[in-house]
Length: 122
Image (cartoon, rainbow, N blue to C red; front, top):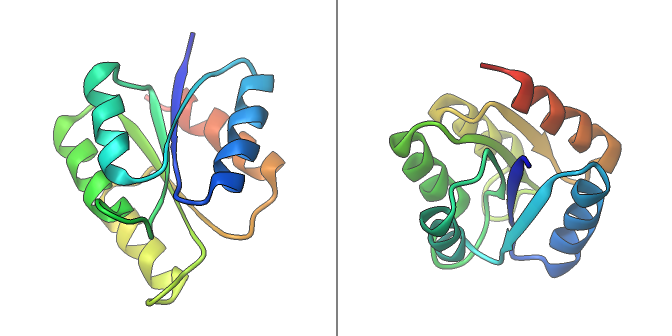
C-alpha cells in the first residue's frame, strides 16, 4: 500500500487530508511538525510527504531539504503564508526539489489529483 505522510501543525488540515487520502486507498501517517515527520520517516519511509512550510520546531523547508538529501521520497509543499508571502515560500520549496506546490486554501480534490500525479512520476 502506498504510504503518504501529512505534516501540518493545523490539526483540522491534518484530519481533512488524512480522511481524504485514506478514502483514496492510501496508508496515511500524520505529524504535527517537521520533527515528528522526520521521526515517522525514520521509522517507516513514506512514498510521498505532503508538508506545510510554516510549522514549529522543524519547518517544512528544513524537512524538505532533509528528505531530498535522503532521496527517494517525493514532497508536495503547501503553505498559507505567515511571516513571508506564501508565493515566495512555495517558490523556494519548488527550487529545493518539491515535486509540486499548493497554496492554501486549496480544494481537497485538487490536492488528491496532485498526489496521484506525483506518485505516478518516476
